[in-house]
Image 1 (cartoon, helix red, strand yellow):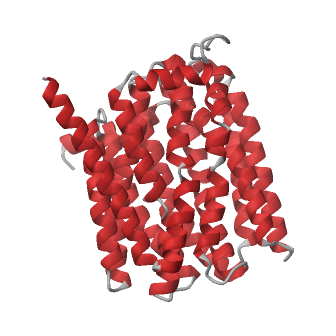
Image 2 (cartoon, rainbow, N blue to C red; image 1 turned 90 degrees about the horizontal axis):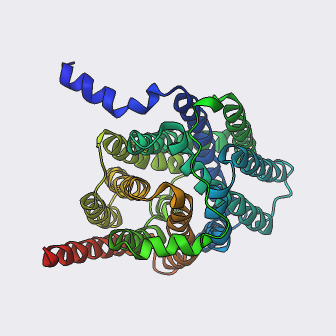
Length: 410
């Protein structure tokens, strides 16, 4: 390997030189694998065990799991900025683990019903809504501003490496032992994260400036965003793609079951195949020194094209190839949006701005998932992918209009 390639590789993984971040990244990888295993198990449980291939029910579960991002928005970002993030994460990770354990026990005992999944999905979403802004902002406490973009990219790399491993393992476990044990494994993964939080060296953790009680709360976050045209455009693009495009549990499960007549193992493999693309996209993001608006444009446009190709795929092989392209583009968009937002936001409002971003990114699911699920049930999964394609093209047009406006002012 050439010296230039070695320098590039070192630059891609430079945040791992930080001891605290190495520990954090190891725990995050374990937790992410468990999370992806649970996603596959939950979708399969609802689609094939508690209903008869009802994509709308999967959409409802997704909605209930993500609507708390909107309901708790006034408190989630404020808590991430106000409280000690490490101590706050002990609370949220413990709550997520307990909820997951309860769901696993219900399934193993053979008493799980659809309404149980609905209730637990909502409770899980409440805990996750509080956890996400604090967990994402905590990365800057570990690595500082200089390596923040790289750390965000590596976080995405970990998440998507887990997306390759978790679904394939979950598919095999569901076939061999049933869905319940997948939930139990994920519950254990939250214990691992709690252990990692204990292991971090507190002396090396940066303590951000805490906001005063009277500084406007969530309104200050919105005020900050609306003063910035670039961030406003970023959120509009995020809303379009995340609400109508990132409904992969519906897209992949319905294409697998209805179009290609596949089982749980092949469904898990399909999700892992897309993770190959998302992993590539995450590594590309980690290698960049700075994210930029043009990365959002490219990611959105290619995402739309990828969804069109997936919708038109005549067989499982070509569908898998399209999923890789979708994965690269979706990850390029998501990681660039997250990194650009964090790097250009003042530290004292970062938690609230992140909470607003996450509410848009995840809170749009209650609107989009039932619609996409209905389209998949009534018109077929290929038309549902068409909705995803339209979201990517719409977001790309939004970016083009922004660039046209910027050029007209220069």
